[in-house]
Image (cartoon, rainbow, N blue to C red; front, side, top):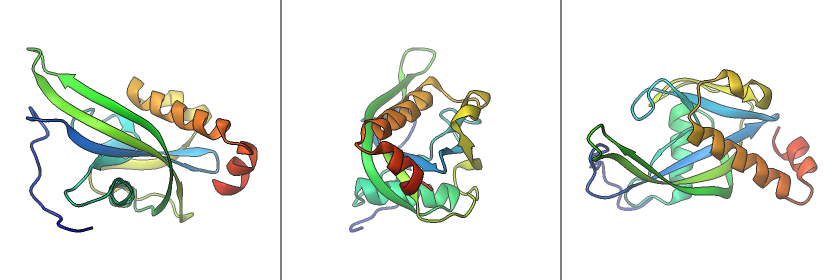
Length: 165
């Protein structure tokens, strides 16, 4: 990373969209989720992620964010989604505006996640358990895109059984 800056743009009422990254991390057919400690969607479960810093590549940002929020180092694979997340306030003004790049990742460690910055809690959740977690429609959509990406890979069963343990 070069030219990194600690000056952060305002997340609320931004004058331009902010670039963020997220990751669907899969281990043993379970997805890594974090309970958000901050707005937007504070208290809801989500995939780990955050803002890209100046001078940081998308891959560096997603690795850093997952490590900060969960303590899990990852290998970054495919881009699974590029999405807009625009949230207006009650008066219709733009409260949050993110352009998000979400990746499929696999953990480089079998360690259990440990919640860090921006995460109240973190854990691996089986696909069958997802409905029991309070997820936004947005998060559910990204997870399903990741699963579709996996199933579209040639030899996806081998990938699921061997590559994502």
